[in-house]
Amino acid sequence: MQRLLVALLAAFDAAIAAAVGLVVILAPLTLLWTLAFGATADWGALWPLTGTLWAFGHGVPIDVTIAQEVLVAVGVPAEASIFTVSVAPLAFLVFTLLFAARSGARAANAGAWLTGMLSGTLAFALIAAGVALTARLEAAHTSLVLAIVLPAAVYLVGALCGAVRAAWDDGDGGLLDRLHDRMDAWGDWAPVPAAIVRGTAFALVAVVAVSAAGLALMTLLRGGEVVALFQAARVDALGAVVITLGQLVYLPTLIVWAASWLAGPGFAVGVGTAVSPAGTQLGVVPGIPVFGLLPENGSIWMLIVVLLPIAAGAVAGWVVRSRLVWEGTPLGMVPRAAIAVGIGALTAGIAAVAALLASGSIGPGRLTEVGPAVGPFALALGGEVLLGAAILLLSPRNRDELAEERTDRWVAEMTASDSGLDVVAPAQSDGIPAFAETAPLDDATGFVIPPRDVDDRPD
Image 1 (cartoon, helix red, strand yellow):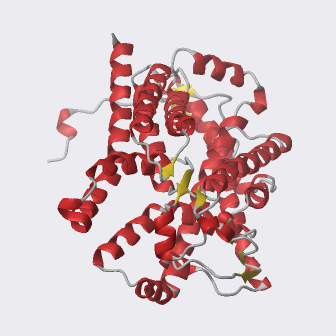
Image 2: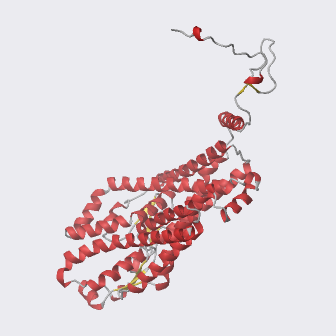
Image 3: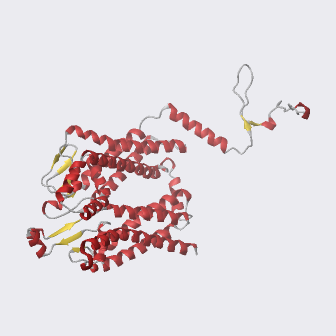
């Protein structure tokens, strides 16, 4: 009965996650439909557009086809009538990941993480299939298979990470416990996998924090250019609100671009363009207000910013090393080197996936190549994090660290002692012999507590 209840609750969590994502898109679109079109609005197109944008937010590319009359009205060349938009607004994907991770953790705490994960993913896949089948637009076409598989894959990854994270330390009485026992038999290599995952998490959090801070700094420095592009667009208040909301859902995507810039390779805003610390080469850029944040030039001296990802790796190495000392598991040089390499490799893999989702096409012609290049970004960020982690993990152990390790081991041994209240005899001094071992107070020779008379108490 408990597993059935966990499965039902996990499916309910998945339904809530999908509903919240759809409502976040549907609510402003409904307001836009009402204010812009009034009673003559084509309400039948509202749901298909909502479902298409929801799938797009989970990484599903959109094939856009512009009608012939629209091409003539706006003066767009005929060859630009069909193009693909594949740079996804990652805010929806991040929300689904976090919500799924929370659901997976709840299932793990209930003792049925595998059941909860599979049930939630299946429910989310069914909802994605329903949305994909009912939300079809001729002007903005999405692949039916990708519209089902990609949202379900996002939810599966989030639920799996949250469930394993919650069940790894507490145990699940099944698969994870058996895996944990096998890893414990590896000796000095037992803590290596967990240390790699922990270090990668801290490195990624540090990189995201630094990238977000850099994006905020550019907003302060180049806010005037953003306002100028808003004014050049000549939109009314409703149009400005729509543009602002659209840019907000692209905030995680812009953070990935900022991370690629800090790592060194930078990103492109069109074919033949480059925005990197070493230099900026831009042609004609679309008049999207957020593009006003792009730096106008660069310098070889600005490559000093690559020290920030290295510092993020150093933070990860320091956290892992401190945890190993706290656990009393000092490792040799080879296992610590393996941890540093693992942190760098896992960071590079996650950076490659993020770059793949944050790059692609946003329009016809030159705009078919936008965002960071997957290979250079992954290699640069992984290598820099590896360098920072290796500096902290492979440096010689100092006296304070060794003293802390001995102290922690002594405290653990004293805590695990089966005796009651023990006293440690002082070392030999002035001819007085020291006890060879600790002895309980009751067995200490010559140690007598005289009785105290009631009358001796002070008034």
